Image 1 (tube, each protein chain N blue to C red):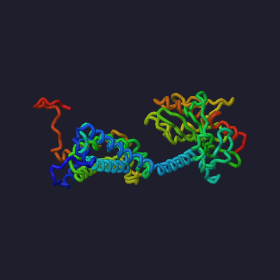
Image 2: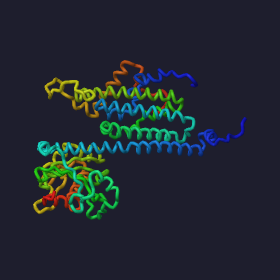
Image 3: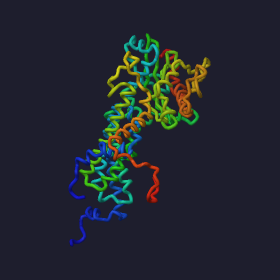
Image 4: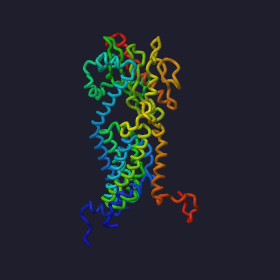
Length: 264
Length: 221
């Protein structure tokens, strides 16, 4: 018989399967190889997936605009395209040195984010970007529709949506939920067209300018409410807070004021 | 065991005679959930077959060196990693279908069919027969999914692969879609009918009645 094998790999393979060393090493090797495989696939495929998501968001914006009554006729009139503007949320004006193309790079810089204090942060975001990409539709030189991307903390995770406001900056024209992870069948129904159909026509502020918008518990009873979702009170509340935050002074408030003044 | 395998019977047995879904009643959750239309059923079948074949090959390659104490963990880790890779691929290249399949691709990990084959067959056999066996079982699963998916899409929407086959009554045709076919219970009914049909054709598959007093004191499951 030959002496003990010098090759450590063969020595390892020759160990009995019950040995603790072999158990640990096999566990480690299997985990390491699988981890490399999974991370590799994720990293390599991420750009393609991001492109898919962007295309999906574009499609949702288009279907949102098309779903608003009278909007497709308006779109054809004004050339069928929305103008895209990056706004500075602090000032409510169009950002000078950030374009839609450079927005992603600008948002990688933590200096372009503002921390929210716990009192004002009703949407549970923590930080808010200083720049946001909004979509404007004009009729003559008046803004007739504005699409505002909004986000907030839902019951299971972040909810992202696009809220459409009519030219008076007070009437909701529609909503499209672009991303959520709410419970399927309960809070997950926020992405169903049947629920979103109760949004158009809802008013945001009363005559004194206070935000009154909310998701009702049950069917909507005032013109400031949209229908609630049965069994999804926390998702409903999250949507209420999200809309209130983004239409308030910390969100698109300055922009809405500026559009009202006719600066866009 | 050494040497000779009857590849043809390993491959074709799971199609009908040993079908994992209709005979062994494995992997039902996904079979019920993703069969509302043919494209999702086919994608799911392909994903499961690929995962099962590759994991059977991987487990079979290292079968002599898997310590018994952690063998289930090792198998699950291998299966789960393959599932994640497949899921990422679907998300990248078949985004639309991957959204329709939603969580069920990720749930291939917990599909008892995959672990069942690696545990029962791949762990004791060389890689090539193991992969053939897994592929055959994948095909058996695919066959059932395809049949149920086609039936549900045809009777639920009057379509196959998205093409209108039956003229719908609200467009002046003769066929009224059956919305029940698009709901989960219809998959149960169809699967039940399928099992019934197969066991009528092959009576040896029928199980003995469950409530005869057992001759030995073996506890029922």
